[in-house]
Length: 280
Image (cartoon, rainbow, N blue to C red; front, side, top):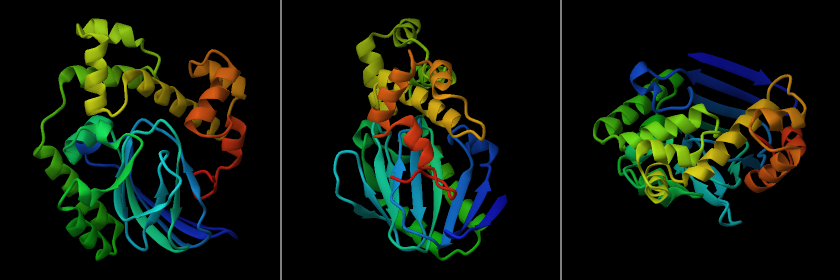
C-alpha cells in the first residue's frame, strides 16, 4: 500500500492507495483509494462522466451531491453513482473529511448492487437503499483507524457480493470490452453485427447492464481519454488531443466538453486542484 501526505498553504491531505487482489482486479478500474483532509477549503468539485461507477464510503461528516438532474445538494454517507452523461457537483460537508473511493466497472457494479444499471443513470443514491448490509459495513469502517484494515473490509464486501451474483450475458461483457479497448472508436453497428444482435437488443442490454446506450458509452470513453490526455504532466495542444481521441476537430471536442463537463477544455484544465478533482 502507498500513502502520500501533502502539506501546502491551501491545506493538508493524505492519499492511501492499494492495488486490489487478483480476484477483484477485473471488477475495478484502478486502485482502492482512501482520502483524508485535515485542513483546507470545502471546494465544490465538478465530477465529470467517466467509464465507471464510483462507490464512496464517507468516514466523517458526509458529502453533499447535486446530480445533473437537479440543482439541490443532498447529504450522502455511503453512496454510489451510476454512469453519467453530464457533470455533477460534489462538496465535503466539513473542512475535515475522510473517505474511501472505489471505481467499479459498470458490469461489476450491476452484480454488486443487484439492480438494472439504468436505474442509476445520472443519479446518486445511498448505498443502503440498494444494499441492506451497507450501514453495518460503514459503521465498521468508521470504527477502524487503519487504511489497510479498512481496505480489507471493503474487499471482503465486494467479494461476497460478487460470489452471490451472476455474470452479465457474455455478449455484453465482450462488447463493453471492445468499446473500452478502442477508446470508444469501435463502430456500434459492427459490434451488433458480430454478435448477431439487432441494434435494439444491444441498446437494451447495455442499458440494463451498463446504464447507458452503447453510443453514449462510446462518447464517455472518448471524453475520458481526452480528459486523461489534457491532465497529463505535458499535455499536447487541444487540437492534437482532439485528433488523437477520435474527434472530428477541436470544435467537436469543445462541444463534447460543454455537454459532458459543462465547460471548455481549457477552463476544465485550469480549474484542476492540487488535491485532486476539478473546482466547479
